[in-house]
Image (cartoon, rainbow, N blue to C red):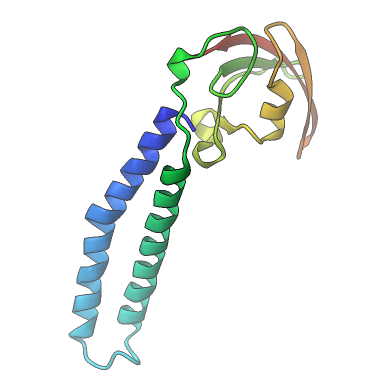
Length: 152
């Protein structure tokens, strides 16, 4: 994963532990004050939320413990590989897009980060500027031309 993805995971853990966890503990305490727990919907909802938070913290800590962090700024080259920011143009629509190829856990298409295991990334890996790439996407086949490869 990239250093940015690692930082985002750590920030989410920090938020869950310092904001979400204390809030749900407070909700459980308030719900307990309402009496009978067997029929207390607020209590059960808070306990369910607590379970979700604890599960998410464990999942994120596991990902971080197994992560191999790659500093993209130290990578170079003219071919597309993990960490590269690739500018492509759709040969059918002339629409230009830039994507950074990142790990599965940090992918976010809206932010321009695509997973290394996505169809577009798999098609781009190993290619260079000027190459044309055919990609089989869920919406049908697409052709892209690589305009720029950079490591930012």
